[in-house]
Length: 310
Image 1 (cartoon, rainbow, N blue to C red):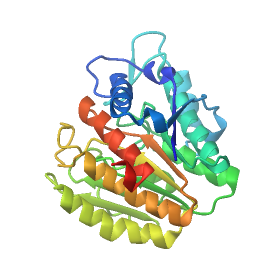
Image 2: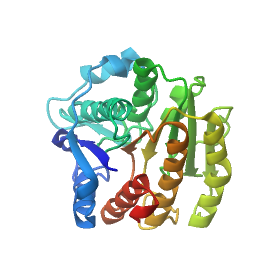
Image 3: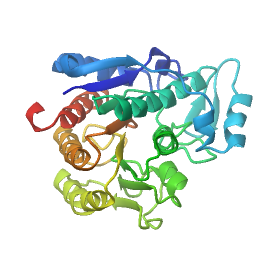
Image 4: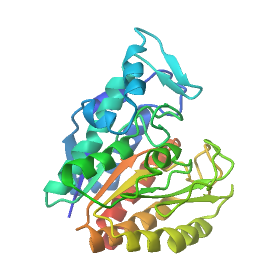
């Protein structure tokens, strides 16, 4: 069993400020830890290809997308929101991040290797239909879900988001689409400062308090996520894999560690094996303490491989 990793050097081109936490060094830290862990022998590396605009228009308002291209700066950077800068190269990186997710969906739907991880940036889960926010330009995971529905005729796609910041953009996009089950956990009173009031039959967002301990987080997602996913019987599981809930990450006050990311991934793998021939596509969201990020991604990949890998 192996995992196909999709990435591309163009994901590093979005680099407006060396002090911005969402920086190219994140991908270097992941790659370094994969090599150090010895996982390279079960990783098949594939070069991502950039997405065209058609799948993006299926998720984002056309006026929003076209407006981004109209405002690309010739040099320096502009701000799409108080946290999200754009340079002349940002959309090149963003299109590659979307493309990697589409490549990964195609791969797991048409190959015997049914597990893929997208080491890409910028992240996506805060981007709404018509707004860039929280470091995110295009909603990579939402575009992947809609692409899977449109191109493979899927009727049930589950998105699981364990980033410590609520995936408000993904929720916004699929709030009225019961073909997509969206399960997320997040720290309350933290960016983007939303609550759980939008929960419905296919949206399950769990807000947990600052200083949430790992056993509290595990109990919440075990009791609420997994029965919901099991009953939904997904034909594909997509993961918004954010690792900024790690105890070493200063972006939050959660107290998670690498083995928590292994645990949740291994549980999702069991559900994928049960319902959708093991088909999982995971894409990088947050995670800004570089060493912790790399170690957490390694644990996440080992969780995809199953109980014998950790």
